[in-house]
Image (cartoon, rainbow, N blue to C red; front, top):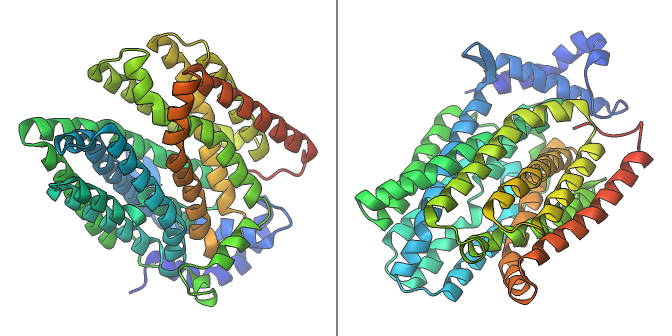
Length: 449
């Protein structure tokens, strides 16, 4: 049964022929790239044909369903994250074992990210989203029935394909034109942020009224609900160009070819450079909050909510305005400068009020950097390979999470909390200089997100 998307795509050539005279008025990424003009036109028309009216505003129905799924995914993830430390302690895990569990999760996700992206390229974004939630439901159910530490480790293994945010980015990339992609990708963070606030609250209530394990069961049920929603409301469409590509899910040559795509390696390097200091800081923040700032659990929850709300504001309001007003290189340079300022302020922070001020430039810089690099990476390759490229982007995040706890623990013990600020400030200063140099060099020829 053909979806509206399928029907439109089959007639796109005729529509383009009739409207070719209007194409010069479209906002395009590269004025010499006719294929990009074509993609902008097709996806803008798809957006018109599949829009729904919600409180007087028009939204793409597939994007709306994706937001619902991302909210449910975030709720489930943060529910289990809230109960996981208490469950591990209940089963007798010491801090070292807990660290091993975190590392296991990060390594498994690192291995699965590129494979998941390739799966989405070959079989479609709906199947990828369903696979992500199936993996999540199995992982949460195993956590629910875990009665020993070995079972806790086993419960981490299905998370190899638990990449619902990546699947959501794939759907948005499929249905949104390049000119609207950065804003649409950024707004996914709003739904995730709402789940980040609601999830721990649900987990706490369930744990208090029933038991710690029941929180994991609730997360499992939410994941199963998302599978049904995805099956019913996301179109079962496979990318048209996928059939001509290598059909192997794992292809080292494909990964190397993606890394050689113009601009891809540079963007991934920037993502890695800005991500490492932040990953180290995030991995040690709970320890710093407890030992340096003596933050009780309830106040720690307030700080997390503050961070979540601020991130939602930046993603919901700031991304759309800034990406329309400035080019990619200048946004990246500005975000690196914002991170540099935040890390510099961190070196002087002596209480949690200071840290709340530090979070402002850090969140602004990191949010813009993540959204712009993700959007730009999807445009370095053809539409047939966007899933695999998003997988590489996610793999960078997983790699950072794999090494950050070890490096962060060593830095905190050996050099103190201030070392996080010194490292971040130095790295961000170098990246800022590189990006401003690149922006000046390419002025007049920059790519707009």
